[in-house]
Length: 119
Image (cartoon, rainbow, N blue to C red):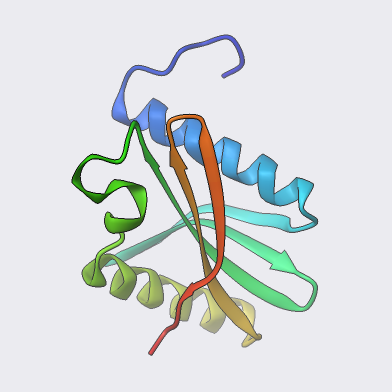
């Protein structure tokens, strides 16, 4: 999407996920899947960080209104992420895992490791 200004919600989300994937790869993580979907849940990015599987939720917001990117990850959203992660682990083998978030507000990108647990 270089040079193209995203206009639709999907284009904006895709641009945010691409920025997050580039950032995480630059930090040494390996992106192994994007938009892993199962009935009832989706994971934006699945990465490897050494031996750990990292499930990443990417949230992009123009600004901090309504609590910003972090507040948009509701308990229901976390449950859906955990559901999808359980499916991933069942298909690909159990592994140490964690849930990270990449929060993008305007031009600011923040990577939050261990943002929440599966409990």
